[in-house]
Amino acid sequence: MLENEKGREDLEHHQNDISIHHGDKGPTPSSTNDEHVSVAPPPQKEVRQPPSDMDMMKERFSKLLLGEDMSGGGKGVSSALALSNAITNLAASVFGEQSKLQPMAPDRKARWKKEVDWLLSVTDYIVELVPAEQKGKDGKIMEIMVTQKRRDLLMNIPALKKLDTMLLDCLDNCKDQNEFWYVSKDADESEKGVQKNAKWWLPTVKVPPNGLSEASRKWLQYQKDCVNQVLKASMAINAQILSEMEIPESYIESLPKNGRSSLGDYIYKSITVEFFDPEQFLSTMDLSSEHKILDLKNKIEASIVIWKRKMNQKEVKSSWSSGVSLEKREQFEERAETILLLLKHRFPGLPQSSLDISKIQYNKDVGHSCLESYSRVLESLANTVMSRIEDVLYADSLTQEPPPSECGNPDSLEDAAEDAGMGDTNSMTLLDFMGWNLESGGGDAETKNNNSLDSNEETDDKSPMTKPLTANSKKISYVDKIEGGMVSPTARH
Image 1 (spheres, one colour):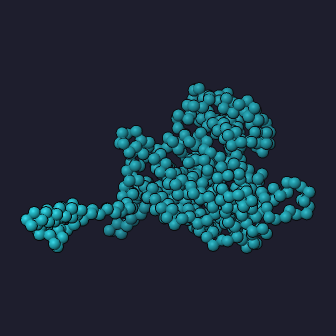
Image 2: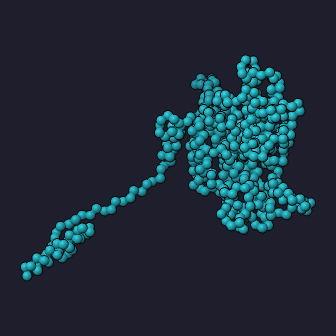
Image 3: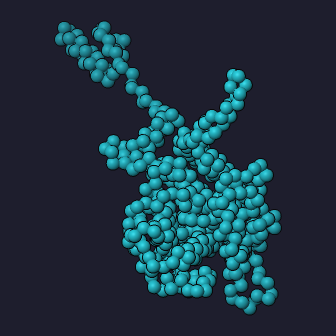
């Protein structure tokens, strides 16, 4: 009996040990053991909150202040270049996915508006002194100097923001369209649509068998006109800012000492002939690839810099002196600038030239850096939207039968596709879209951009990229003329 009771007690103690080991609250009701074990609740996972706008802003500006060198080792770039890179990288991350003619995703759109405002906010503190009147306590009017945002920033930042809004609105207007759609690049050949440019990585466009309706076709043409005006305005602003940037000494030191060495004998002789025709000159050049066009552009820009430097130092004996007369030098420079202007109009998608890259890299003016990079990314977006619209118009043109008079011409369909959607680009101007009041006053920038575009645009008035903008006021000088350093909408990033 005693042995059985002792065995029963040992068994109960063994069960209590097992229950405690497995985390039970205590012994079973039948147990005589009063020992209790407390078990801690499982740890809760911390929910990480997304960073606030203030934290993100601090991170952005700390990177800018350190010149993109977060190690703090002092190896960063200048503040101007860091700011330019920040705007460029932001645009690349936001607009890089714009492969279709459709509205931007709300989160990407909100991010772009918020962060570009952060980066442009530094221009609010770039000021200059301007005269103003102040009334004293005795009633006398005194002239004093007050601070005001620098004139180029005061004029161009609001204009660029307006162009930005116009582009985003154009994309938003495409949300209700249902007459064209996109097919993935990985789809079967029988299901794929068409594409104007051979960009295999982009989805192709399909339209109904009978093409777009007349209303949709006119609507797309109107959107193209809007984007075309934005493209020309952003190119003009970018060109104006680049022309105002100083040419770095490192670029000048890399140049040969005369224009003939820069251009080569054939090009130099073609430019310095007695009777010069820029169109005839370009027709004799090999412009079959982007590399060859860019090489010609680099040579022309280098020769312009060389000739200008020779004229500025004509009375100083230096290695830049030359025996060519001043009048001839000015004539050669004007011809080279005409060629450069025609190249920029015909090939607006060229990469940056060596001169443009050098100017951006060595620029120290933060205001110029903001204007150049902002106008450049808007130019890039406008070019992208223009390409998406032209893809749809091209797909629509292929569904249309050629006129009877051209049925025997094998190139008629291609010509019709090239002319699709060109329309009358003079029907509306940038000023109509932006709502600027030209009658409100003049300005002191009237002599900057008024005298070389008119004589050249008659030679190519069928192209929407060569139409001058209609402007009756000299105040907005960058609208009157597209000149200097037009850089690539697609190859700058």
